Length: 374
Ligand code: UD1
Ligand code: UDP
Image (cartoon, rainbow, N blue to C red):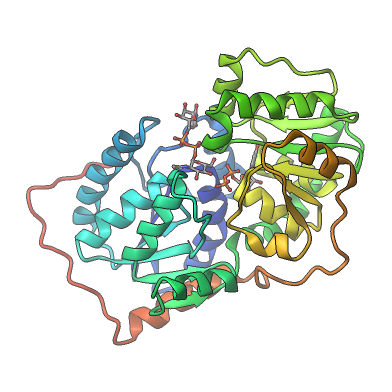
């Protein structure tokens, strides 16, 4: 079985690590790793390959940043040629990025079997580009690999019931596999002069939060008013937005470059509180039993809210400040995201679907398309 795995953005690299390992465990499976180049700064890309031992991608499309249409189109054109040249049995995509949608679209139109990891996530807010990517990816992919039971139910509500598998969250696999090493290797607390349980970790990168100067200014004011150390690793999109508004931070706010994964999970594990708009960070807060406040009005990860460990506070300064001071998670911590074996469950699910009557569609014969690896 020849699988082309697509990665392009930070959370996709983290998810790639356990999946690549699970594929390598099957002698009859071959993985071709394709990096679209959506993220490219060292701390947004290569740092994860180095730390997590992800193989060097077989292809890097080097698309870089751009408007949604421009970026997605650049990936789509190259991926179509690449798929024709490689004739994979299956294309695997993850989550909801522009890399995801470009790959699933290119593959589906060529009649190549597609598997979508993190299927069935919804915010039900179509103003969010990621929501469009998810809905389309779920509508046209063949195998749906869900992180939680709620995502299975959401797909069923949309009439998607065939080849839907609850496998658990591969981000949890990554956490279990790497946390012991991260604890050993990361010196981030010392480096930043932090004491465990005496700081708040903040991440903000959603377009809805960064591209609205009034919203972003509210977050900056809330961080500046906090009476305790705040660590704020800044995503490049956010850095640019903060520079545009000439944002200034109080001394207790440690505004840094993006963290490596090891530093990030150690910061998460030791934080008194996590405030974020990241899907991955909300779940990691839950894995690590850290209280989380989410700087959005809705979340795809509703189970963490229902369990009482995540509170939606949006950009309302009163809600943020009150939750910051008083939020206490509930005592119960149900298992929502599986047992940390999602990656091998993903490969099992693919094996099951591939081997069943739900067979491959034929790949179109190669036309005048040549693809040279970069
Ligand atoms: C993307 C995903 C989002 C995911 C996030 C993970 C889409 C539509 N969104 O959002 O779902 O949560 O990745 O972090 O795909 N930039 C750099 N260096 C880089 C990468 C980006 O400077 O290495 C800057 C560029 O100015 C770029 C901006 O960040 O325009 C946004 O990057 P982009 O990949 O378009 O979207 P993200 O906000 O990262
Ligand atoms: N992350 C990281 N360094 C950072 C911020 C996040 O390693 O400075 C990790 C985080 O631990 C999680 C993943 O990146 O594993 C989440 O990615 P991101 O927040 O960019 O995207 P999302 O999950 O919202 O799609």
